[in-house]
Image (cartoon, rainbow, N blue to C red; front, side, top):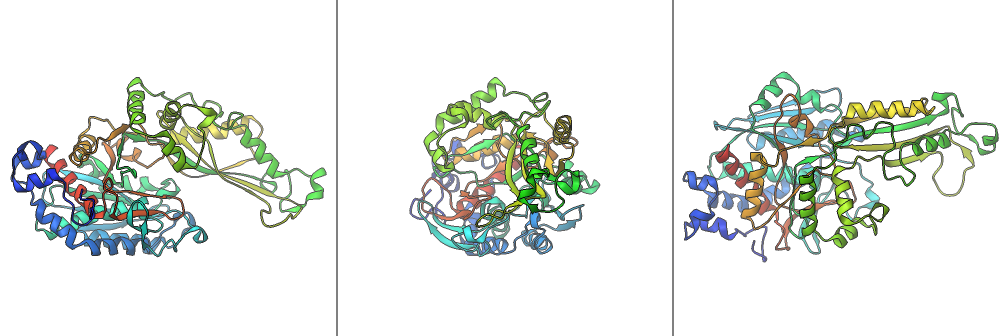
Length: 512
């Protein structure tokens, strides 16, 4: 990439040889270029550059239409706006799909191609505290960020509207250049990813949607895959998750007050807050680092020797101090080595407190005995754990220890997902990254979660993964951003990220 203007004018040397037909072009050209005359990449690239401002505006406009499922905020308009973006990008059929929760979207684009690719989108975003942001979180401000160049700042910028808008920009460029889209597309989107996808199955398992997905060769989610140093990891899977709240209340249990009372009454009245704390203590080991729920590890499949080899290869390319600094921590759990910590990140189930609230937390004291205490929690799951099984074990564990009065309110969850590293989907991702001078690592399992299980599991059993050049950060945090015009020669700006999706689609079509 051109270090002066990487996001607007760069074209990597290999692609240039492909376009010009110079010496060595045959060796460096991708599969589709050797098999046929191929698409006119120069014409597509010209469209990407010409459409740059429109592509940026499309992303900004999307960020300005938030949909926050956790607060049931603006979900209808957010869904409708996403539907229109898909129509504008060329999808002939775009349909809102009602669920038992927030609506999903089913869309198809028939290009008359031989093969069909599935797409997963989400249109919801996490909550925000505007006071923590350098600019309003839904203004989608373009700012200069040291070390990266011009970025868009806003909730959803990288998770996931930036990468998704980048893929849509690729469709606009292909059509604008008069080129034929090489694959048909089937897209399913949801508005509840950020609350652990409680109703996504309502979308995917609708008979006509399921029939369309059965025609797909695989499913992918657009992604900003590059770290600040340009490095890329391809995740072969992700942990599952259940998200829930544990509630102790006098009103529900009959032990403790049904409302807040004066703290002097603690001598004679049970405390729901202490009861919740005692229940939480039973869920983990003494240091809080391992789940201690009865039977929690019965179904866990430990990392294989090969998976450990993949992690070791990642570690060899990583800088521990950089990761620690970026996380704002000084030690891994139990002062483990970097290698041990990364093994746990891929292979260890977790029990995490997201938030713990009871009574008064404002300025000064209030001397009350709270009538209610709540712990927001998430539990990450690994093969062969299931979301349903984990819920059952948690409830049984609490009941066995006399905490059956603790309410367990599950808000969402799903199983782990895994895709074979030898699948066409993964191989094409590797090929495109290699073409851009990147040696991607293979990560056995993302420490986080996405609902890929619904594609990789029964009844579809399709490969599913992520792809895309580009960089962003701050998902779920203040000042979330996505790089638009890169000043970092190792990181793709928007235009190069768009072209990576163009390459990906043509390479996939040639190899199916």
